[in-house]
Image (cartoon, rainbow, N blue to C red; front, side, top):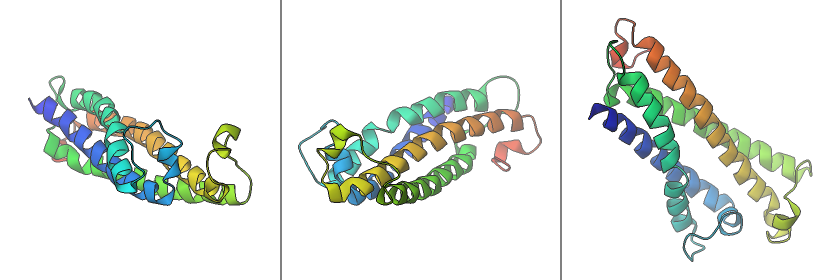
Length: 175
């Protein structure tokens, strides 16, 4: 049951992050969701799109993190970690993802306005020209979140496993 709570924590954390992230990016460029993604329901509301895509696009990432993290935290004879002790490392990962997404979004925007990156032709034809840079900023922010999430998730998993054998490691300190 404690392993399931770790998986649940990861899924809920990913979904909350995804909803918050998409609430911001949907307001930067709603076309990123209305043109750049398949329609999930007929709306152009940034709030509804951010909510829907925030859930759809992240629950599975939480599951992918949660299963190996639960194994790293609970398997074997070493002192076991519970979900509560993993809140801090997961929150730290989400903070790194958010900062990375913000920086990448700004860089993507600046590259686009300076004509160093462009939308693919099929998108450029559908996205209004004055929204191209914003669309690319959203894309850069999303790519950064996924990339940092997977890389950082692997780091959290390895650190949890390695630190389980150290005294005081069940409190979450040091991870």
